[in-house]
Image (cartoon, rainbow, N blue to C red; front, side, top):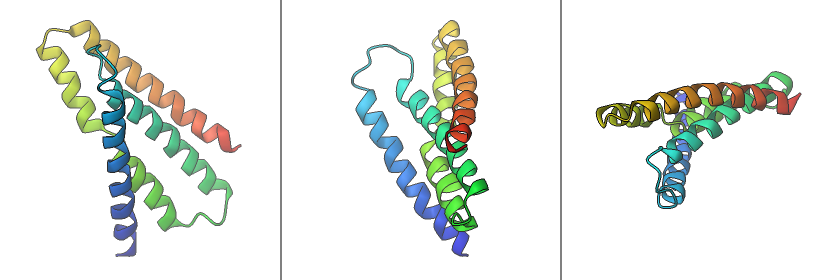
Length: 122
């Protein structure tokens, strides 16, 4: 039951951070590319890599704190559902190139940043 509480708390913080990014970046962009979701997903990918790498090397990072930071914080912060919806909206608006670009950049960039996150600790 304790693990659920840690995930719950982390998710709340992650959701608030995600909302903050959408407020901070949405008004500044006139481009139809969904920058707030893109930025949140990259940041979450980096952080999940960082947290798992820290947990692999540090004994002070117990299972509950790792859940708080990964499943909780990163899970609440990352926005796959928003990513899916925004991609669908681009395709429905016949913005196929932008949709493909968004999917490709999101997947590739998040994989790279997860790798970078793990290497920061080493």
